[in-house]
Length: 242
Image (cartoon, rainbow, N blue to C red; front, side, top):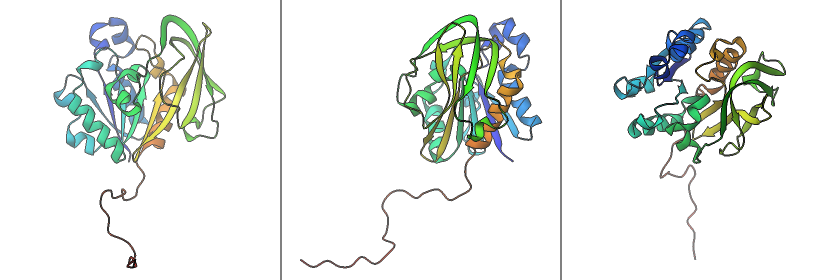
């Protein structure tokens, strides 16, 4: 069974009654809930827990980490970020959602500012499937339509994705690379744009399907990890004479 940890700041839920009404168990609770219903083993972790809930034991028992953050990126410990980065390099999958584009962990793994345009104006969003053969799009039609969402617009300052899965169009005219995959070390990363806290996006069945598909895609492969560093020859090296 795939073990998933859903990480969330859990700050909007405490400060904003609108968010609390939409996600009474927190964004993390909503995501963990539909993952458990689908047969995944899901736990949650939040910013204000010791080590942000991402202890060595939790990380070692996480196949895929889902990350949602917004208000408090700067409060995330650099030490925890380094541990998460190493786990990704070792093979743990990472799914970064919405405003997690500005998280320390995503910026470290991307090596860029990860900046973008944004607007809160109840834009309609249409997420077009760019790669219909990709397993993350399994069960999804030509596009997903969200009647109200926060706009993110290009230019999105990220490295060129290994694979571009979704491209969004917004009612105000902007477009955005909304589903991007990367490989870092032995791990796989998926950035997925939708999920502003004041909209019920994570209750949308198609959005849930994409996240579930992404968990299956990002889970570690079952193989021995490569060995790095100084290596003995596999064959006898012929002695060279001058």
